[in-house]
Image (cartoon, rainbow, N blue to C red; front, side, top):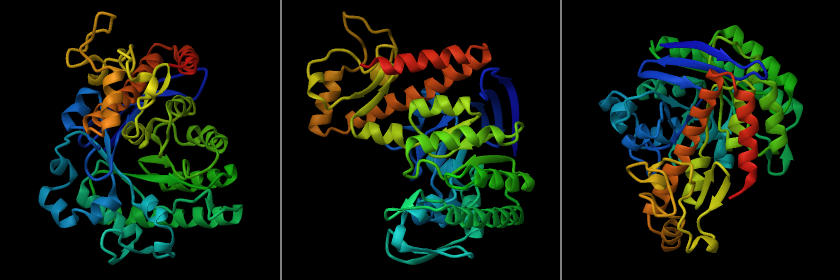
Length: 390
């Protein structure tokens, strides 16, 4: 089941405000989706995700297939009961993880042969197998198996001919994914994935062929795969708004806060990226006024929270009170610096909570701006604030 309702549009850009209804709940768009690779958003309790406003999260088809396996998933009736998250879940197809195996895999028309990175077993992933795994996971949004077209391989930048061959095989795999999805009577929603590398005309061909297949929703893949930022932005500006206006649009694996705001302006409804959680574990946090590295020595005696405008548990504590010079219920930069230097697990847990809260709150602010016809002003103020610096 999938229903997408378009609620508002922006006259100065392709930005739009929508509502996505899925089998496990309603999602307000534009939305950022936290990534939960192994059935968990690393270091964050499901209750905390709900409290910070997460509406939909990701699961990773490839890794959940490896561990714990489909027999365990089947015994729980899918991923929701297994990880105790009862809102919508999107699962990727496994294509990106297979691509990232490099020399450990061989891609053919039939599918991908590879050695398991867990125990070395010889395995095979095809569009049909991907649909079977995702059906067992019972994810609300299922992604077709595609070949993730790389920007370069061992120093060789992908040519137009190579990108075309990859894109055309992904189209054939889209049809096979669609056929298997229907055969399995999967009650959820299947998205097609636009490929075509860094070539706009190939993106357009991919888009047109996928639209002819009439998927419930569409994704733009093959970005954030090592290409220069300007190339990613170029494809982001070209493709999303050309997808059907009455269906949700998902930009895969993107990105920075600036990427999200510009992606919304390009017509994107849904985003995911490991950046807020991965950067948090490495001591880098996102704030309204730029990025902050908690391990830097200048924070050793800093009594301020990470972001004085933030109401997350890390910045404002349980009570969510406003910060002032007299003290605060939240945690100081000095304390987080100390935790980072000591390798204490509470440190990355708190920075992860902050980064995810920041991303989710940013999307809430975007939605509010679109509802009140002030997205253009918001976009300008956001850029000014982020460039100001900590």
